[in-house]
Length: 168
Image (cartoon, rainbow, N blue to C red):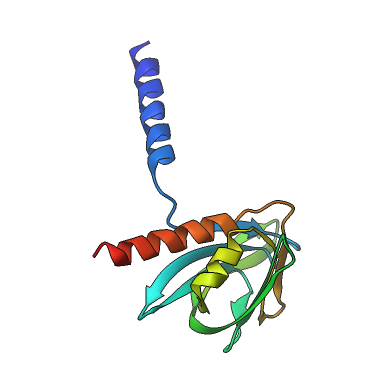
């Protein structure tokens, strides 16, 4: 009985910590095809006087081109086209697993790029992102949303980065 109460208590504390913690990134998992599935993470940072969205893709094949492009369409049909710069294409862990007599290799590539936005463009993102397209290899990453999953969060991350800079 004491073990059960201890378990409930720890679970409640963990739940409260998760709820109270501010999100430092936003993102989603996208699997149009099993082989090209990827996890996308978005964050906002300030570099010099400009604000950037950092996009990190974790995948088994996808990586950013040398001069990546991002297109965003909001739910109000506003389109933002951005040119970016690659921060890195790192080949991560290489592993494999055996099914029957077949060895299937599994590699992980972590690729990051920076895209500069103006404060006005961040305000447009707060209207919600309906579609996003990133130029990658071997195929472009494209995701449509029925409801906003990352637009409002990116705007909040921008406000947090701006607040940190102003409070220094």
